[in-house]
Length: 101
Image 1 (cartoon, rainbow, N blue to C red):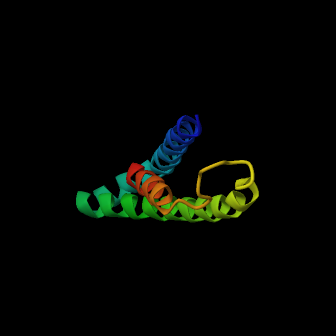
Image 2: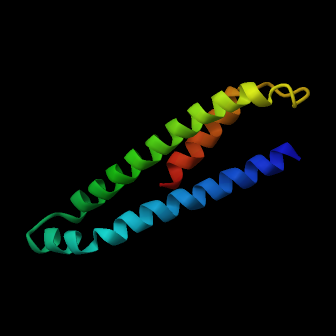
């Protein structure tokens, strides 16, 4: 049951990051048009967008990991047979969320 809730939370977080990055790109479409008209390479624009998305994703993952490590101390008494800070689960979820960007 905990795994299902965790997977659902991971999917919702991935959808949220995707929406945030697509919103940021949509806001900069005019800027990208101006850059292309002034001679910017498409690869340069792609690099710019990916760097912005990566910064947002890393900031979100860092805050999320800090929050999850803080809250696992609180919830460890309620869970039986589950380690409070499972590094494999935390690394997997962080990798998935960064790859979504």
